[in-house]
Length: 315
Image 1 (cartoon, rainbow, N blue to C red):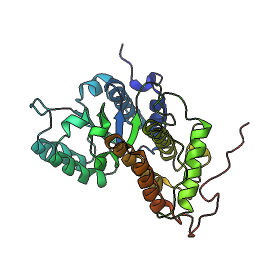
Image 2 (cartoon, rainbow, N blue to C red; image 1 turned 90 degrees about the horizontal axis):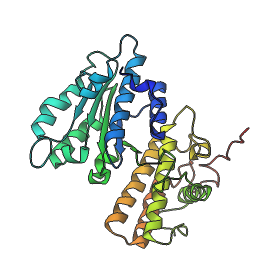
Image 3 (cartoon, rainbow, N blue to C red; image 1 turned 60 degrees about the vertical axis):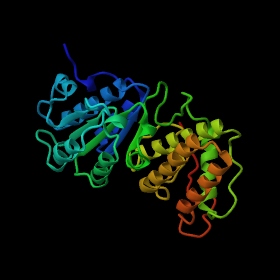
Image 4 (spheres, one colour; image 1 turned 120 degrees about the horizontal axis):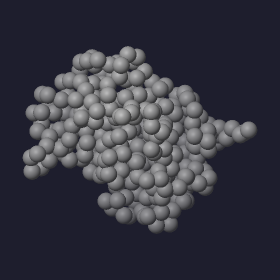
């Protein structure tokens, strides 16, 4: 007998946090799910929608409806049959996106899932049309982009989505090596946030905690996941023990600023992969982050702990 997705225990650490965000009504309107294959992210997308529909009361759609993509408030789009696999711009503009402007048909939320988004949205025209909708979404509309090659998507799209990696062993506060971010990696992030807040773009950067481009790439991925965890649990709600949420002050480093910081880290990571000159990318990262954070505490030089709390004691 088929059972609902929400009745099964989460199959990935990301899933538990996302389901919790649905429960709290704090789920981001645009999500990017990445992983070596799209099966797990797609399954999670169905579970999120099913969980949201259950909260509406009444009889939720069957798992078969969601799997088949036939429910009017849960629509799945994939690559076209054309040689380029890209969705025709006319279909996206005239048939798909107009649906996002209307109230949901049967539920309180509507879901638009783009499977293998790097392929089906792979034209400049499609990206430009989608960006307008991502910037001003209708309340209750959720977009989920699923891709095994998230960096094939333009920066403008990725920066508007909350990114969740479904690579094996990675959770929101974990890095690409599959293990939880170490205290040293979190401390390095906190030290750099303090430095960027109390300096200027033209000043010298801190000695970086990396020796090779591979080290830098790994550390930036760790920092991204730490900051994504901070964003996921803003402004309220429980947070994973030991995460950066326990030390970052949400009043000084709110969701919007955190999102901008993750955008800059992601941009640097992409640039590092295109151009492995570690020194240039380190300097560029310092310049961009200092521009965002200088004086964020309301003074030219932020006090040492303006952005940070001491970790809460654990019982």
